[in-house]
Image (tube, rainbow, N blue to C red; front, side, top):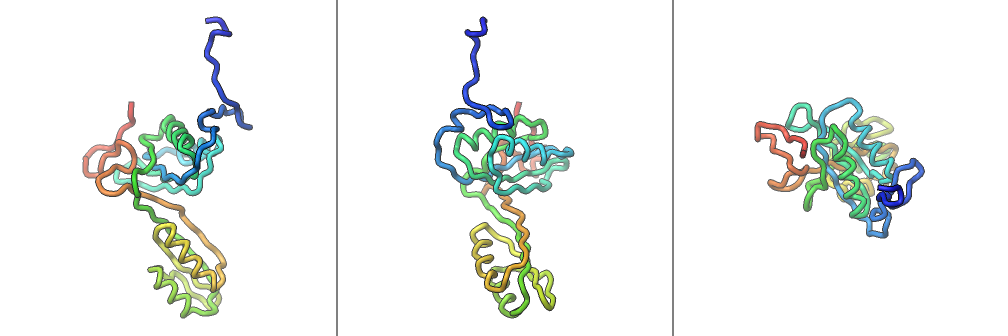
Length: 205
């Protein structure tokens, strides 16, 4: 066809020259989504996934990665605050990466948890210990000036615990970010086979 008859892509480009889908750019309400991806263990796969999402100007609130029940596979759990079209774009763009086996938003009310290491001042060790026990935490290190505590749980419980520890003077915090699994028999990533199936999840063709 002649140049004027050829289809032309719509939408503008961002500062990196990447075209922005006009549907994604339109006004939509943002919401928090937990996205789970099964990936093949390859050097740089985490950098490729996070770089792809950040280049398209989507904000990653947290990102975790770890092994699964299948050798050579890892699970990436990503929490984003985006519109529905934006979440859909993240899933589609991630699915195009060769190491990504399966990707999708975790369905329903997922089971989520994160781990936090917290260092506080040790002026009142008995009170610190009481708050630690209240939130089912563990004391990992106790010295004359600082106490380091480990906490695990969902985000709301962690936030409540941090509020309680602020009275002692928080010196340092290290948070892993959320990791998640779907409830019941629902696969966490689309098409994911259970570890007892005897065969790994494969790419959708």
